[in-house]
Figure 1 (cartoon, rainbow, N blue to C red):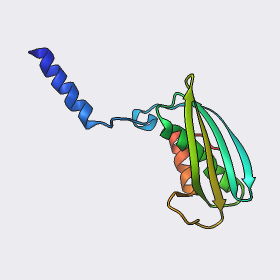
Figure 2 (figure 1 turned 90 degrees about the vertical axis):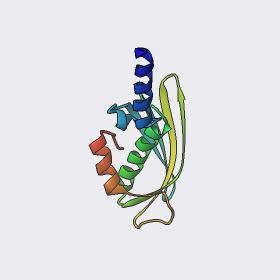
Figure 3 (figure 1 turned 90 degrees about the horizontal axis):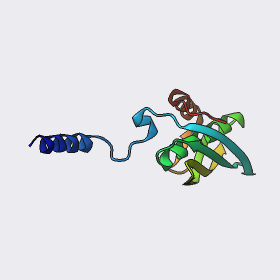
Figure 4 (figure 1 turned 60 degrees about the vertical axis):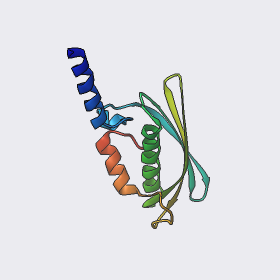
Length: 130
């Protein structure tokens, strides 16, 4: 009877937590391996990021967002808008290929970021920027 109680307790605890936790939720920090930045056209930039120890695509997407936010600030802009991010994992290395537009004013769209706010949040979370 005891094993059944243990199973029920474990199932109850599991149901209370997130089903796909991020590295932030688990208190883990991936090994961030670097960012390559390419200016594609005027205000359009591409960010190639790599990390080891990420748990899911969102962890790599956050890394790319941090790079985009810092890049916007470096270029003298205050905002960015997410265009797309592709993420894949191979051999324990997660790679992200993200594209953002950068701008001095808040751009149109739903996936916009305030670069100063995002960079500050990235520093708090230990995610490097450009």
